[in-house]
Every structure is written in structure tokens, then in C-alpha cells.
Image (spheres, rainbow, N blue to C red):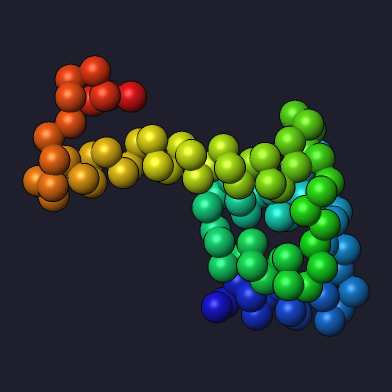
Length: 95
């Protein structure tokens, strides 16, 4: 919630939510990359443009899919196996 309040304050003061940093990345792209989904929601709610491309050519949708897939690939199998729901085959472990 703090991040959403910051976004609100910035927009009230006229901040450009689509401005880029030295790496050519908008705040929206940066927050997606950091998995800071409260800020992502706040930025989108206040009008940040999801179709702007970063320096590598990805827009917010591309990056979000990449981040979510990474989280699923890395964390979900480990969480499932540690919860003893299933035992993963050896060829799936360590992906």
C-alpha cells in the first residue's frame, strides 16, 4: 500500500510515469522485474503505459510473463515437492 500511495503522490505532483531511467526502463518495467506487484497495480491504475518497450525490446506484458514463468519454474516445483504432495521425477528437478 505504501507504493500505491507514493504513485498517487507522484502523479498529484505531475510526475511522468512513463519516464525512463538511464537503462531505458520505465518505472512499470522496473517494478515488474522486481516483482513489486503493488507498485505495478498502482502505476497501471494511474495510467502508466504498458505497451512501452524497454531497452531490450520487451514491453510490460512480455516482461510480466517472463517474471511469472521464472517464478513458476523455480519456486513451484520446489514448493510442491517440499510439501510432499508429489515426488518430482529426476529430469524435472533442478530446472
